[in-house]
Length: 608
Image 1 (cartoon, rainbow, N blue to C red):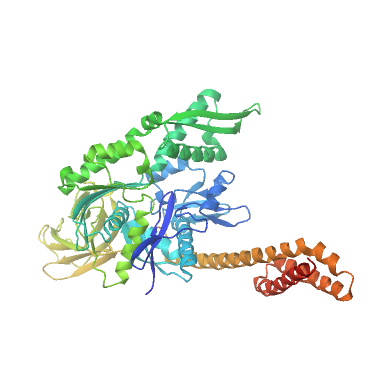
Image 2 (cartoon, helix red, strand yellow):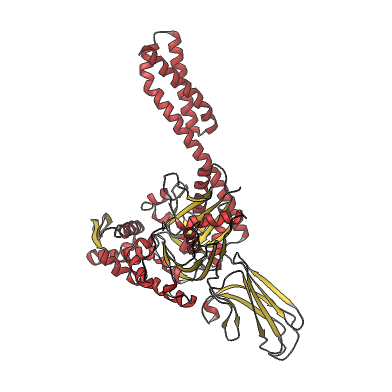
C-alpha cells in the first residue's frame, strides 16, 4: 500500500511520522534527531541550508536565515502581526506583489509558502531516506485557529515541496488522535497546545469505536514561544541600553545572538531556578571597545516577564469552555502539546484552571506528527474504523446593509455542514446584488476576512424588500466553502467555490515547484557524491598509510615497482574524479581502490 507521511510543520521545529505495521512512528533525521528546526538559510555561495545546519550558522548569517516563517504564512502585508515581525526579525521582510509577505534572502525574494516548502521538502527527504523510496502523499497539520488563507498557503507549500497534501488537519485534533489511538477510550478531553508561534485549545469527545468529535476550538495564531523569547530579549536589551547607552536591536548579528541566548535560557529555566546569559564581545562601543553582556535570569523573573502571555491562553480556554457548553468537571483528561508546555508556570496555571493535573503520557514535540500519520493511514485504508468530526474555527457569513456581518455558519459548527438564509433587496428596482463572503467574529464586515465575492444579476424589477434571495453556505470535509445565491421567484442563481488565496498566482506556484524539483535532484546528486567520496577517501587513506611499508618491501623487483606505479595511478585517478565531482566514475574507481588496498594488505601479511 502507498505510504502517507504525517508532517507537523511547526514554528520552531518540524517533525515527520509514518504508520508501519499498525504502529505510528516518528522518523529521525540523519543526525538522529526526531525534530528538525524549521529554519532556512541561503549562504554567500547561494547554497540552501535547512534544519540543524541552518540553525548552526544563524548568528554569522542572521540577515539570510529565516525562522518562525509559520507566523507569517498566509498573512496580508498590512496586519499587526506582520508589523510586529518587522520590528523584531533580523531577516528582511518586504511587501509582495499581491499584498502578501515576501522574505528577501541575498538577492532573491521568496514567498513564505516557498520558505515553508523548503522545510516540508526536508521532511519528505527524511521520510524517503528512511523508507528507501519516493513519498508523494502527506497529511500536514496547521493550528486549529488558522483561517482559510493560512490553510491554503500551507497547502501551496506542500505542492511546491512535491507533496500531494491529501488533508490539512488541525494540530490539537491530531494530538487527540495519537492520544486515543488503539486505546478504546470513551473520554472528553481538552488539548492545550502552546507551541513556538501559535496557541490552540480544543475540546474533543473520544469514542471507543474510533469516533473523534471536536466540540469547540479557539486560539491565537500569534502567541507562543517566540513571544516568550521576545520578552527575554527586551529585558536584555533594556538592561544593556541602561548600562552602555547602546540599542542592541540595531545590530542584526547581536539580535540573533540575543535570540539564541533567550531561547536557551527559557529552556534551561524549565529545569533550574536560575541561569546565566553570557554573551562576550556582543558589540563595540563608539570608542571601539569590545562590550560584553552578562546577566543572571531567574525563573521568577521569567514568569514575571511572561505571566500575561500565559494568562491570555487561560482566558481563551475560559471562553472556549463557555462556547462549547462543557464544564471543567466534564473534562476527564487535559493533554499538553507543544514545547512551551514544558514551562512549569504553564503547567501550574493549566492545572489550576482545569482543576486537574495534565496527562504526561504524550510527547509534546512528537504527538502532532504521529496524529497526522494516523489520519493519513486511515484515509488510505478503508478497513480502519476511524471517524474524525472537526469543526469550522471561524464564523462564516456575508456582508449586509450598513456594513454589518450576517453569520450563516457559526464558529465551532461540525463539518461537513450547510446553512441557508433568506435576504431581500434594499433598493427599488434593484436588478443585481453583490455577495461578499466573509470569515471572522466581528459584527463589522470590514474587520473580518474577505474570502470571495460574486454578483447575482438579472433580478426582476420590484419595490425594495420584495425580491427574496436565498443564500446557502456549504462546507465539505476538507473545509472547502461554497456559496450559492438564488432568486426564489425566478430560480435564477449564481454560486462561488471559495478557494482562499495564499498571495501566489498559479504561474508562481508552478515555477516554484520546478525550482524545488531541481534543488531535490541537485541535493540527491550531492548526497550520492558525498557518500561515494567518503568511501573512496577511506580506502585512499588506508592505501597511503600502507604505501611506505609496501614500497620498502617490493621495490627490489621490476614487478614490485610496476605494482607501485599502478597503485599511484589508481590514487591519482581517484583524486581527479573527486575534483571533477564525477560520481559515476568514482563509483567504478572504488573497485580499483579496493583491489589495491587488498593487495597492499596481502604484501604486508606475507612478510609479517
